[in-house]
Length: 185
Image 1 (cartoon, rainbow, N blue to C red):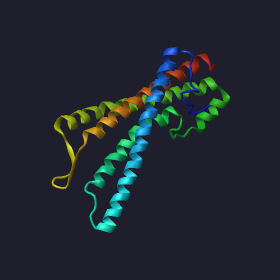
Image 2: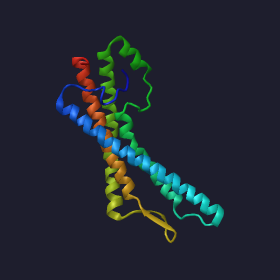
Image 3: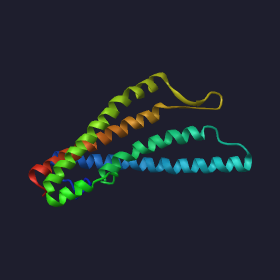
Image 4: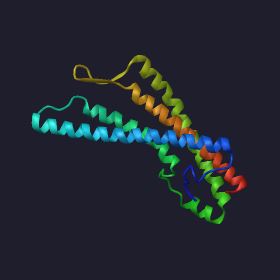
């Protein structure tokens, strides 16, 4: 079973299973917000194109809003993608190993998820000071006199999304480690 969902990775340990369930629900909420943001951006682009064509007046700041939204959408939806077992990866070797030994496959998958947790921790550690600086200084994006928007909300979404992604990686690492040592229920 490769890239199992949170449901598939139940361990029988109430604390870990409850944590995974809470994370699953929290990531689903963020993913829904990301979907709403996609729809909002599509609507904004449609209105901007229509306004340019019929009125000759574009909406100020659309390129900046789209650019910021793309970053926000990725981090709103990434943790749920992992929690649902839908994160794209190359797993031919892992599938072959899992067919031979479920426990060995789970052990390697736990190592890979642990590596993911480490990488996201590095990202989170590097990005958090950027968020604090953009918030503290009130940094803006855009052109003075035309359109300005604060950048810190997007940086905050990156921090929150990364933190949830890290938590999902850690809980999956723990669950897979338990499956590798005890076997699957």
